[in-house]
Length: 227
Ligand code: SF4
Image (tube, rainbow, N blue to C red):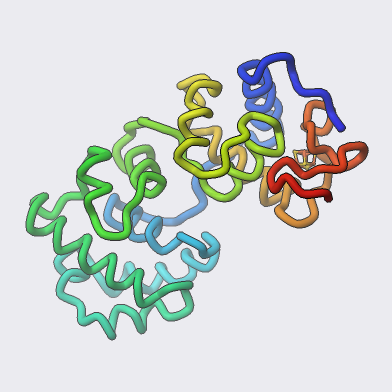
């Protein structure tokens, strides 16, 4: 078991420093070429890998161009386009409805406020944060996905269980200039080393400051269960 820094603020700063060194090119892995494509890719990525989403959207983005195309697409046709993605039926509904709202209420433009974004179908705070950060260069919060959730708990940054309270806590700890990058660093480390089922603590740059480190710690703080 590693020994965390004295305060959670210091722990967060140390985690950011080390992960930045380990993953200097960390960034979003979804592919898109405009804000609408970003919004659609993020909606599709819920409970689905970015890799799978990128494979599907390559063709999707060639077929549909602009919010009217999605809003006017028959449900069956759009769902069929997405059928290798988890919950594709619901996601097709969300995309059609969100695009209808974008056409009718936002002159065809993806809105740039948290409130307007979260009013769109299928868009929660996490999706809105990604679109604000990468589509509009507005950083209002920290995107808390499954990797951020798991790593923040394992590293002793939070004991909260759900994304929104975790985000609130992280916003107190992580320097504001790193809110966007913190997510990408956690995702990269979560994919490469601190995986959900079998983290490679022996080869982890955070091992000496991680209270969940498997060498001595018997508990995975992410789940609260024994390793
Ligand atoms: S891989 Fe192990 S040591 Fe590293 S952050 Fe995850 S649980 Fe902690």
